[in-house]
Amino acid sequence: MNILVTGYKGFIGKNLIFFLKNNKNFKVFKYGKKNSLKDLKNYVQKSDIIFHLAGENRNNLNKEFLKNNVYITKNIIKFTKRKNNKTLIIYASTNQINKKNNIYTQTKILAENYLKKNSNKMVSVKIYRFTN
Image: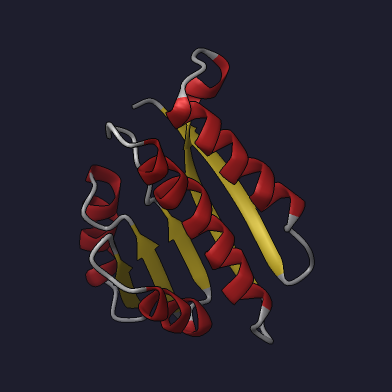
């Protein structure tokens, strides 16, 4: 089984990678800020499961929140829709959505809504909200 982990350098990503690497049945692809959009497309095309853990939670530039929380999510959906096989996307969001109104929570809501809207028979989406 091929698995893509976005945000692999974060706390959850590092631990997930450690766990997955110990299982010989999994081929793991890692996507982070230094990877290209071409890398993302390639990894999505090959993946059966995507753990979408990437996200911007601290930055002085609002455009970075949009880029790393919303646009990456839209690209994952776009590339997933071009595949001929079903893909499960497990998305890590935040429980701050119901508590705070800032650029971080606004972009996480946009990403969640986009995932929900685009979930269908070929793209299965599971959203989990974590404490930051």
